[in-house]
Image (cartoon, rainbow, N blue to C red; front, side, top):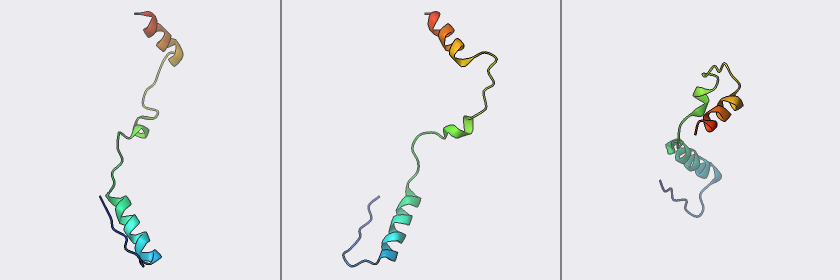
Amino acid sequence: MVMVIKQGETKKNIKSILENLVKGVKPKGIDIYKYVGKINLKKDALKIQKELRNEW
């Protein structure tokens, strides 16, 4: 999206243009925070990782 700011625009107009620009931008990727605390491990994560690597 491209917004044109002309010479002589007021600070108020520029701020409103920037706010509209930010509203239109969607974040890329996934929201990882929705997965925080969802996995309950019975072993230490480092031990699990070492076991998986040793299988190869």
